[in-house]
Length: 210
Image (cartoon, rainbow, N blue to C red):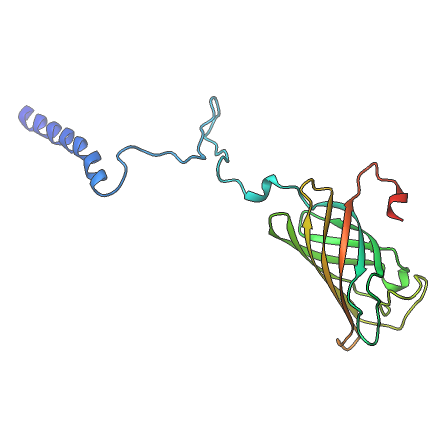
């Protein structure tokens, strides 16, 4: 029995000594490898994962979330139905970008024209964003009319904005395209323009918005 026992022990030891070589021949490492992001914390009740080299690339750039003062300026002439001269400021607004990918804008226009509108946004690149902004308006959007003017009923409009956030995160700029729709879904006004924004902070005076 003792001879059989020692033979079994010797066979087991031989197998263990051959395992690293076999692993190496198969292209597998002979030593256990811990992920670069795996750091057992001293004294912790259970192992923890700590992010190191796998953070999201965009985690270190400034964020769009917050409140902004945004000015929209037309560049193209607009449609025949709604002629809009280039260089005309078509909207002066306060905008809030939320961390859940939604956005809300309070426009400096008459409430009857629909001065609150909503949008959704996504991150498209380093400090770059796309915003799909959809005002559901009660009256025809005519930026050339006085703010107190109430136009005929309309369905709504759509702003598509492509913007770039500044490196310090305190401003952004970009371009926009606007299509205004009647109640049948037909586009009756369309033009493009540029926009510029400054971040609103707890110290921003109201006079900065005028």
